[in-house]
Amino acid sequence: MLPIPSSHPSADLETAAPGEVLRQRQQQPDDVLHLLQGRVLLCVHDGAQVRQQLGVVEGPFWLDAASAMLGQPCAVDMVAETRVQLRRQPLAEFRAVLETLPRAAQTLLHDLATGYRQQTELAVSRLAQDAEARCAQWLLRHAQNDASGTMSVTLHQRKRLIAAQLGIAPETFSRVLRSLREHGLILGSGNVLKLPEPRALQLVAGG
Image (cartoon, rainbow, N blue to C red; front, side, top):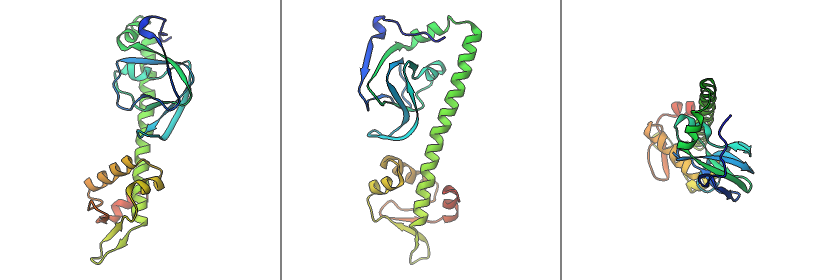
């Protein structure tokens, strides 16, 4: 039903090696990728490695057709798991061909794209929530009462090592700490973090 890229020069065959990032989250591409051969991971990538895998697709497959139809940026990172072959089709050309389809078909594709997008965004959101819960649990587990009676946590290890223990990227750990700080759940920016609202932090931890 979708337009398949032809051998037109605008859709020349490309190859990508395993581990190569094909699309990044929040990227607004001006073309659409059609995977011909190979496998691609749909994931959350931290710039160095795959942090969370959401799924895997094999060619032939339209990698970002849903985003292209809705005019939205990519919802996930796309990384080649194997050596892949693909073609790019200019976004304007892709949409022009879609507009030649019967109206009922266009409506169906739009609804499918919307549903797929919503499910993907929900999955990514849950991953972020899971990271916050793990961080909150870790803080509460390592908290002690200081001289003033306030609960605090001393970071005896580098944040990178703590993040590895939690199974998240260092950037994610820093982002979660920043979010907790902005919400008043932790205080301090050095090695000692105060927990002024342990009950509220417990809610974040899922307790």
